[in-house]
Image (cartoon, rainbow over all chains, first blue to last red; front, side):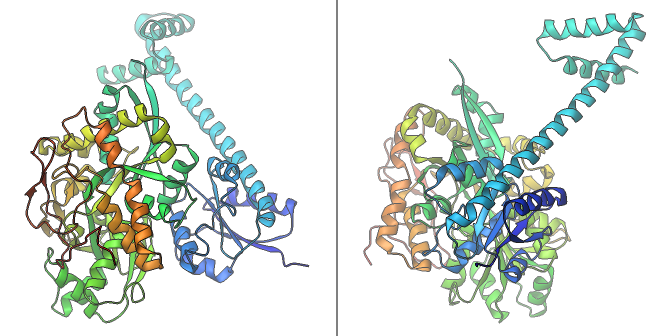
Length: 194
Length: 391
């Protein structure tokens, strides 16, 4: 029996690291380590001596790994990332999902494929969650601005809430701008005048 | 005219200005391009996004496409160099501790003296840990060249480490490195944070080192000549605009935005004006030609520049020198430069390669209109690189 694959995950956000770990555990038996502090990255990776390093490509420290993979012998192993450079669709998927894999020790691609697949799935899921969260946050912010703009209109023109909203919407349509933009200009103007 | 969308990537650095200005000052729009810019966290990420087609063009370290052509690092793919977007513009700096050590030994060298600075570092008598932004970068090449020419055996006697530009100041303060070579504003940020001092601008090691280039996937440049030409003209005009001193303040103001550099415009202005603050107690130093975007035919992608990088890389990793130089020359697309910029006022040199390091003063050379003046391109040790010489 071969020893379990040893994987280092470099990830600053603990939740995200945990998600990857959870998925990996479902797929197969791996020895997993998480590094969340980028300082002395080289020494830490060397200490674990992993088979695979997974890193978020939005992390600047990724360039440090690039150096590590070159250090051993650039000609024998010009590319240690994404295992098999002939598999360009896997590479594309990984880059798009935001994950990079660096194979620190030589490894057959059959063993790393499930690792990458799991990581890619999780990175996608995390990205979706983050996008949803941002969208929700923005919607809330816009809601607040629109409410303030409505209030300003209701006071200054002595109209009801529905009329104020209708006025905002009509102005936005006439000017070809988003409702929240019109509301924001109104709020800014009101602040300047008060 | 319908608008064509082009996605391009950059790393937050002062010399990303040509792409940013091409967008912000409307040069891209004039060419009918909607230029969408994406900030990348690291050079490897930028390279991979280019290779898989998430972006069509990038602000790239000149040695990266050469390294790829030689099969070093990253996914094997052909990335072409369409034009040079900046020359020089980096600094060598040391930690406050090393600066004190140099001062104690009474040999803190002059700021513009590459020879003295290199000898002072070597005289410390121990291998210094030096941070560079990427294994394949002009920073690494200049360091190896500089200290190698002064008698240090490179790369063995040097401990060169990759530290992303934004993390350089942190790496110094965490005592992971003793010195660095990095593009602005990140050297000035180390000074600003009180963790380092500037020792030398890289233009003193080599007075015209091609620093960043406009890089594009080879197949895109081949199959989309129209888009490629539009982008090249927009970037070329941005470089010309950047060379006007009157546009400096505007440039600094645009670059300081959070979406670009997110660093105070006052610090960005140091690189643009060549007026560097070298120590945290405010010592200033003026450097002529610190960062060039346009002057002296800076934008022309000389095949000999690619050949020089290839020769350096080949020597270090043990590749055949001639094969490497031939591969590098092929990706420096002087042909595309001549074709796509023909409708502009860009000066076209008569030749596509030159001796590197032979000019010590601005020199007029043969060109289509006879108006072209090349900038000095000397190496500090006076060596001359002939791209056609056989070894």
